[in-house]
Image (cartoon, rainbow, N blue to C red; front, side, top):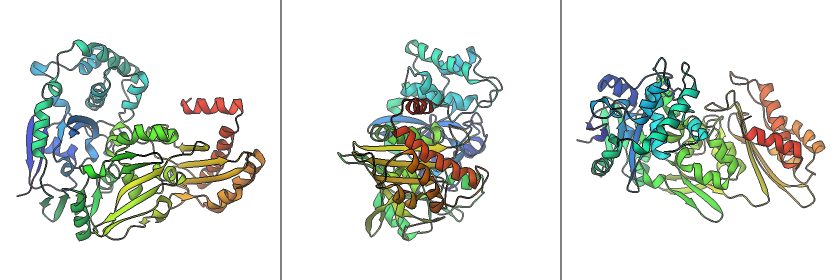
Length: 490
């Protein structure tokens, strides 16, 4: 009999039948009766359902905060799931962050407090003395409408100050035992779980993934589930079979050479943050505005490309960088430009049985300027109305030697502004030319109106971003000062 095995708090769980779309939140509350994990938005926005999921990475146990409401149980093989009930020590002794939140009035109604505790506990494990900015980032995915964040910030700072003298908590004391247990629970072959007519497939390696997808070309491949999870919780879709790939280490590699960065398809936003911020600062800043910390811990850049959303944030950024995507099947692998991967709304250039294996991103030249601008109603944790990416190179005379412009949210797919690029190339990079180029964008895009933005707004915003690019590359002191303020979020 094939089984999914993982550790829940201090209990080893063995499951031989479960729906592929059973969420961790529902399973915790309805099957295990662990009701400290709350249900709020059901789409990974509010953070009330936050739990920790730990796994062994290069011999170490790494815990990340995740949204239980969109995490499917079959994706938990050989992990350690930690809920709020497990944090307090013997006799109800609270962890420093729990005690500080209680002492400094960091909770009022308390509904969202368990999720806040889990997010902050994860932060303090990774960064024992976090800055105010790091605390804010950790709380991007946790909404509190009662307490106000200032008292929560003070609680984190107080907890950090007391941790050095605090009694080691359960996760610290049991770390070596959990590592040994998770290593024993790692599957030795592909797992197939049946639940009525529904099926979950957990491939042992990438070759088994290719075989499974060749046999089941209509299966849904799930990495982070930050999009697919909403198909279930909001659209009530029945999905089967589902192939889970978030555990495949072969697809989690990050390689950096002198001229490019290569990301495996299952590298999460969190895992990619450092290497992308180092090589492409604008892209590193964009990642911090994608979802909350829990979403970035689950979501993958490969998945953001693979699902082909016209409002995905990373595709226009990758198109501007001339990135390529590697597609793999049982018959082998092939590479194509990311811009050629998107054919039309809902259709991508994948043959039956092909899946995204990796992304390759050429590094910038020293004379290339790269910028990304995301327009959304909220600065943090919001979907784009549009997202524009630009790569510009000027010659010694100040003319446009080359320019690449890509937008998401302006068409049925992420798309380059080919007419605008052609108009600008070879011309002086100045206000008169850029003002004329603004009209060219109307030849490249026919945006739609929806609840995020009207077509007219999208077009005007895109034109204004082209002007912003000019201001930021003009060297004018006022423009550079304004740019610095925008980068600081002022």
